[in-house]
Amino acid sequence: MLVNDILEVEKGCLYSVKWEGEDLDSLDQFVSMMDDNMQLWDYLKTNSSYLFSGYYSHSIESAIMQIRSEYEELLDEMYRRAQNGPLETVDCLERIFHPLDNRKILINYKLAKAKYDGRKPILRIYGYKMDKNCVIISGYGIKLTPKMDDHPDLVKEKMKLNALRRYIDKHRISF
Amino acid sequence: MKQQKFKKSPAKGKIERYLKDAHWRTEASIIAFRILSILEQRGMTQRDLAAKMGKSPQWINKIVKGQQNLTIGTLKELEAALDIPLFQIPVLREDVVSLNLSMDFTAAKGRVKQIGKTKVIRLNVNPQNHIREDHKFQAQV
Image (cartoon, rainbow over all chains, first blue to last red; front, side, top):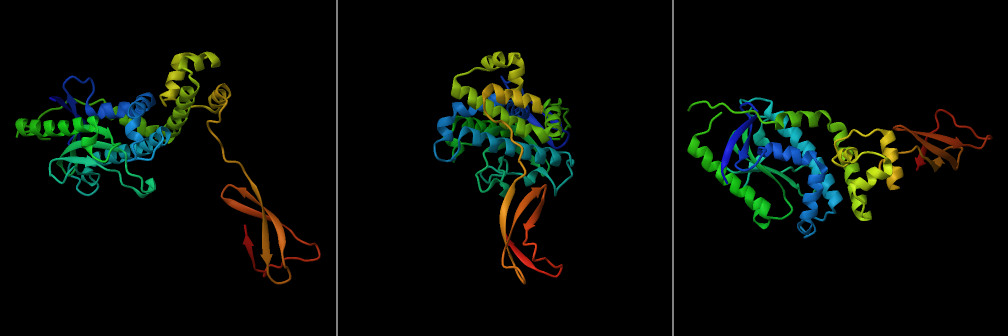
């Protein structure tokens, strides 16, 4: 898993990794998938065994409705905060990106809002937090299992995060 | 550290376009998924639906991708072709209520009509009685 390039989404605040062998950068892939119902539909059908495994009590249709609702809110929150500029420390990306496993350099996103009626958030965006309002997006996930290690796509996202961390250290990336 | 220059991601433009259209995208997606679900249940393809409606497969494909801001006319055509409701507008409804009135009234019946956010109550009151302005009453709906 090699970093091919890092692309700018919002200067100083939001960046996105383009992985070797992939046509689109991570955030572009995320937006493109969410923008195309067919891709989302196919993904959930392919992963229906995970969807019906008991971690979530979802039909495909209700899962899609939740995903779409989370996507809209997530996109709005992330983009709005990114536009506040790199010096913003209050209404910043750090508020929505939390540590993946309490280690400083790894983060994931959990949408935890009351309007979801206590349902577990299903959508994730993964990235490396450079500063309070600066994140490099490494990937995304539809979390259908309790742990990342329980699904191959999420295992891959973990590998991407580690690869990104090594790349940033090696190339001394700064914004 | 040397400041690096970065190429621009196409994601920015896509995000801005989506957020601009967000007010209809969610509903369009839900309708699209409903169509996909029905097609799968019936063993129909998008091409079958297109042929039934006299439209191009590309047009149907855009709809099932959730990328079309559907008109009411298009929704009605889809509903007719699939024989299912896709979008419903809440209708005005009238409820029969019983009002327990104090003072000179023991009970009165009326009808409640919802007009927008307002409930309007029309009472059927015995013409021998009348409601004074200082009368108070409770309504159970």
